[in-house]
Amino acid sequence: MGLRFRKILPLAKRLKLNLSKSGASVSAGRKGAIFNFGLKGVKATIGAPGTGLGYQTTTPYGKLRGVFIAVAIIVVVLLILN
Image (cartoon, rainbow, N blue to C red; front, side, top):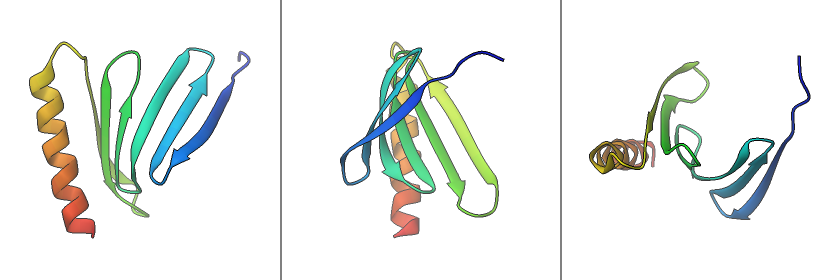
């Protein structure tokens, strides 16, 4: 097991800067629906808080179509949760 480093800094409401040994990323969202913009692409995570059920997908920046689909899914989930 190696040494790990992770630091999360709040930037604004529902916006965080994530720092680790492998790089930096920005997360936006709330419990149940989060976007993470990092070095490898956009990661979209949706789930039902408290149940352990969820879905996660990563889309490389070169595949913008997948990003737009992920954005649409997150928007729908946020509308349902509000």
